[in-house]
Amino acid sequence: MEAWFVDWLHLLIRFLHVLTAIAWIGASFYFVWLDNSLETPPQWKTDKGIKGDLWAVHGGGFYEVAKYKNTPEVLPKTLHWFKWEAYSTWLTGMALLIVVFYVGAQSYLIDSTKADLSSWQAIAIGVGSLLLGFGIYEGACRTPLIKHNLAFGLVMLVLVTFMAWALSQVLGDRAAYIHVGALIGTCMAGNVFNTIMPSQRVMVEAAAKGEVPDPYYGNKAKLRSTHNNYATIPVLFIMLSNHFPATYGNEHGWLILGALALVGAWARHFFNLRHHGKIKPMILVSALVAFFAIGWIIKPASPSAQAATSSAELPRVTDVQALTIVGQRCTACHSANPTDSVFTAAPAGVMFDNLDQIKAMKDRILARSVHTHDMPFMNKTAMTDEERELLGRWLAQ
Ligand code: HEC
Image (tube, rainbow, N blue to C red; front, side, top):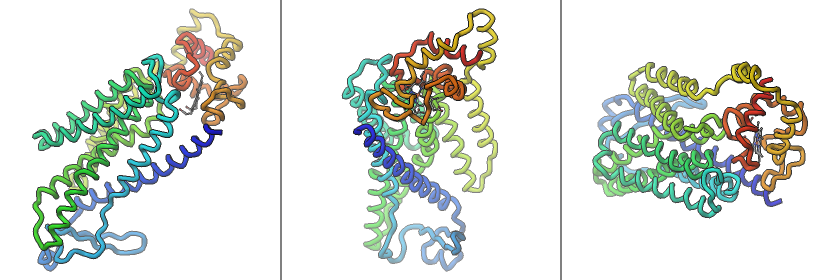
């Protein structure tokens, strides 16, 4: 009953998290586009202090947007801030981390083949990594490195990759990935809360007094906003990676995370340049090539090639052998009547109660239990490498 309720709560929070994240990233992309698409305004607008304007048509109406060089003549009564998109994404993300990974620490966080941790120790490592990582990022933003965009970006990439490596030494692979994603998300929301909003408050106060705000604040906010912009694609990839065990489940999952984060930020660069009218298709093409190259490098040997070598030398695996392995290692969860304490309904609706059901899922079983060690979930049922090999051989026969 309790597991059922937690699952239902999980659905609600995940839904809210995706929804708020769409709103946040949507607003972020929109404003970067807006800023980069501004055109020189007519003289009468320049006289009012407007430095750029643009026209748009959307949803059956015309919009005229203007950006002021400093402050408007009079501050409007209503000023929209766009901060709750960020805060609510972070809050729902943390709630999700707690409900899935911390409440279910035994199933989702701990991999006893890596480190024999108690739930509290594993949670402390997770939370500690977020605090430490956030502190390092904020610290780095206060060094001269911040003035060099490319170098700063590369150093952050190395740190993120290192964090993925360090976490994957002690926590389950998925948990390691998701904590790196949560860390980047925390830095992004922190930028909004710690830097962008306070800077804007200073600017609004100055404007209210009829003063010209120090450009230092505007520039500082803009820089953090740019960091966020480049982080969006890597962070989205990490959040979605949980559906792709080939990434986190790889023995060098941390390196794959670093490589794909680089490719994602590089692809984002194309769009940022394009907004300035600089169209460099080679950026996007090279990002795509790199994306497929990574996939090619980590591709497991094809099952038919494996079968060709194995069937010549090794005896056939019988249906009974395969059924026994699946019965011992999978059906605790994947059955019409699961016996696992956490997964009380067959996960993803996948059941392995008979041969037909197993064969129907051949490709997915190969992907998750033979080519990667992603199933059994956190190897809860302690499947051995030999059993994986036998199951793979049987499926390829
Ligand atoms: C402790 C519970 C548990 C055990 C044991 C377990 N699984 Fe899973 N399995 C899950 C969960 C949870 C999901 C859904 C989340 C996901 O897809 O990662 C899942 C999803 C799957 C999927 C469907 C998703 C897809 O990739 O299409 C397959 C296939 C799968 N498991 C195969 C296996 C095999 C094969 C075994 C045994 C060798 C196994 N599982 C053992 C919990 C378990």
